[in-house]
Image (cartoon, rainbow, N blue to C red; front, side, top):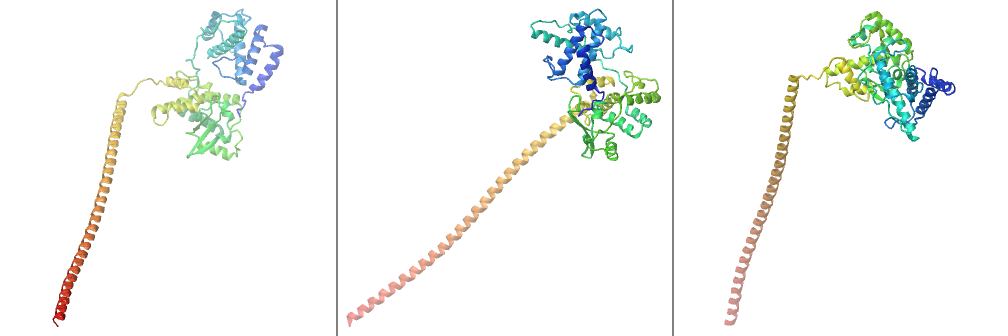
Length: 436
């Protein structure tokens, strides 16, 4: 089960109870009523866009919708638009242009790093409003079509190399050192996925330590991966502290941990910038380890393409698309250049391998054909030997028959001679008797 790190469920329920009765503070009644109606519909999954997933939204999403949409409404109210449904396309386009340029700033006086988040919320709200009115037979114009998207704009982050992480470790206790290394190694989402991990989600397989982030914990999809740097240390951590399978691996305040990260990073690296496109080291937070670990893996994939695939990194990070990996690719300055010499060698090797495979197949066919011929020849030899044996047996039988016939003929001749002699003797005896 995912841990509600920031207490968003309780925060949302309290807001809901108050807003239904008193409305949203700082908003006009028309805006407040629309905001409450929209958020409650999203809680139940009503009137959602056909392009969006079905079902009610999470407490994280509900709080995000309420916070960002109410801020957009306040900005419009400051420009004399007390009912957001009366705003025009030029009103909202100008609003987000001013947010991007810094004309409209955050409560801290800083420029909005990702005004597109607010634009997406307004688009979602307006499409909900169009659907509600379409069902009542009132067509509503889409005033959000011309809002410029900043999908290519990614927030700055503190970029840490593996050596930077190692340089930070001595300033933390052993458990915190494991935490830092695990964040960098696993590129897990922190703190939500991180603080929801249980001991049963860590296990040994094929001589390595693996981690499974189940579907109910993951922001996007469940996944499993092996650890490269802290597997043994994590197993020892669980065993030495007798952490039961159902217990959480870590329990700490993200706010407190982030403050320590910022303080230590400022002490170690000073006020310098982590990268030409990165943030200052002193702004280090838990989530920066996810970005930095992903960049580290991207560099490893560049040097070892046969060992680390981009799809494996995407899966490990829980990204549904390659957008973030493309961002990291540009971040580290990789381009589309292909090493021609190496490619030609690979192509030549591939061609030789294919030719070799063809020769092996031909050789196999010849061997099989020869084996069949040898088997056929052996069968012919066996039959010839069998025929010779039968002929020999017949010849021997014929010889025995011939001998027997010769013996019979000899006996017949002897008997005939004896019969002739006997007849002569009888005739002589008969002649003597007549003479007497």
